Image (cartoon, rainbow, N blue to C red; front, side):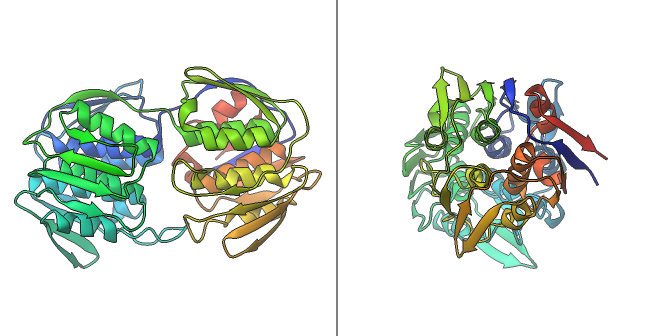
Length: 417
């Protein structure tokens, strides 16, 4: 099993390019199911989850081709297998995103329930209720969602909790529905806006993406398009935190500063000097690292996907800080691993109190989920001596070539098979 071995204590320095956003690419790949014409998608990150999604689409009958610059073409001319099997869905919950487009275009779908998730429950009941409101007949049978509808009908759908994948699934389904669909309490994440922009390029009529009310006017058919996936704000945030925590100086290219306000504000609080260009962010640590309180909440507030990385930063910052997780109930699994490196962290319920220590010391740690693995890499970059991060298949789900990029910034890191 692969692991990352890190010799810590080196300030990161240099420049890197940020990859396309995983959480935007996955729903956009699913959008290809809405048309029989080819969808050309650029800036797709080379990640385990993307490979899984392409495998699923291919298994359903879509023709998938990938060029050497990670441009993907998907032509879903004939879908002969309207099933998303448990074997694929269990490895990646985003597979649920084929449900809405498949049902809208083909009139039926059979999608496995996702099952458990390491970081907490992510129920799909809002996806199901929304599709039922649009006229779908849905049964749960032998662990599968069976959905049928001759043609979905526009509806007003209020989601009682904010759900990103729920918003995306229903927005895709509504593009081919008869009439207008209004999604209230919709997710406002930039990745939802990116999907909406791709759908609009395919001929969909969508208003309000990026606000909490999205209106979709259904059309008879969508067509192919060329679309470029937005940059990954979580990858960008992770490298900025790593640079700040190691006392470094970095320049990120191909990035969108406008969608990183909450993270950049916290890094400035921590003592970083940050300058933003149209598609660049530079960060330099001049003074001592200061601890910062964070509280996760839906966009535009502080992202849950950056919580673990800031906990690693706080572990060696001056002072004490609280980290409060409001999105997932089991997202502190990295705490025990950080403690193995010498971090002083106490948890109670959904809050962790982190008291900065002078230094962490290298040890063997185990990644438990995608963002936890990123926090352990950050901690390894800070720690004195050698840190070995095991189970790094988690990190390959969301970070493209992480060891190569960190090496470009001067880190001593290698993958060991």
